[in-house]
Image (cartoon, rainbow, N blue to C red; front, side):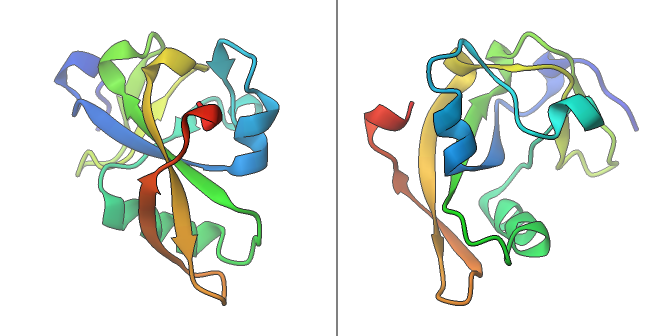
Length: 127
């Protein structure tokens, strides 16, 4: 299923990003994750539990600190496409405007690297 109308999308989605990648682009007007050039889109996820599942599936062994961005899809200029029938994983086909990021949260992890929870909103200096 493909849906290219962000107006019909849920208002907020989540994007998991290593803290160092987010910081490296702090002065930019747009954010571009490492995979955008090779994959052509930014991975997003609806639901706190689902984003923790994604973190554990793909990044559990990566010891870096991670952040979760709350993205307001209505403020995203690039096309938003759902390629899954459940409409849980929107893909943003282009860079993400920083003003579309409503909040940034740190990810809480267990000693073994397991992603366990989305923490409190991060300090403003992370925006």
